[in-house]
Image (cartoon, rainbow, N blue to C red):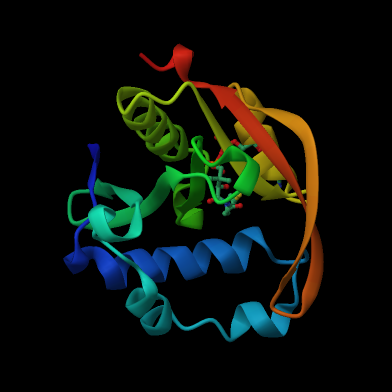
Length: 171
Ligand SMILES: CC(C)(COP(=O)(O)OP(=O)(O)OC[C@H]1O[C@@H](n2cnc3c(N)ncnc32)[C@H](O)[C@@H]1OP(=O)(O)O)[C@@H](O)C(=O)NCCC(=O)NCCS
């Protein structure tokens, strides 16, 4: 039985291992292979914050017994013009668990938490070429809002598109 719960500092290393595997599979062919192959979970684990009071970010993890399968991070928007809005910052699921419903369980829990905090909408950014994630978001009721930006990830210039959802549908 998969459970979604609040992440703690003790989850950092397992979270980082699944996170790196998710990048390496999900972004293969979308950003530089050398960069993906060089990702080190221990470095990522050190960068996480598990203190929402300090970081403004909340992280939930999906666990199957004692196996951590993925995480979602959310909080206030990083976009200046959306200062009072919510953003889903990250959703990363271990590749063997793709297509199992874990991703939707994490997303629904994040949206429910943001709705409970009083937000009406949430935004997220996704690589324009990330077809699988875009289809997932669209099926979950998110739509591209027409906003686009360029970023550089691991030396690759990438286009990103912004999605929005109404949290009214997540009571
Ligand atoms: C994005 C992610 C969370 C989605 O979770 P998931 O469990 O894979 O999602 P699902 O399998 O339920 O749905 C994915 C959709 O892509 C489709 N799909 C499956 N394989 C695919 C492929 N190789 N290429 C394109 N689409 C594919 C599925 O059929 C489904 O579409 P549908 O609803 O139209 O049937 C997960 O794949 C992941 O962690 N990816 C890597 C990290 C990532 O990209 N995170 C998002 C960053 S913004």
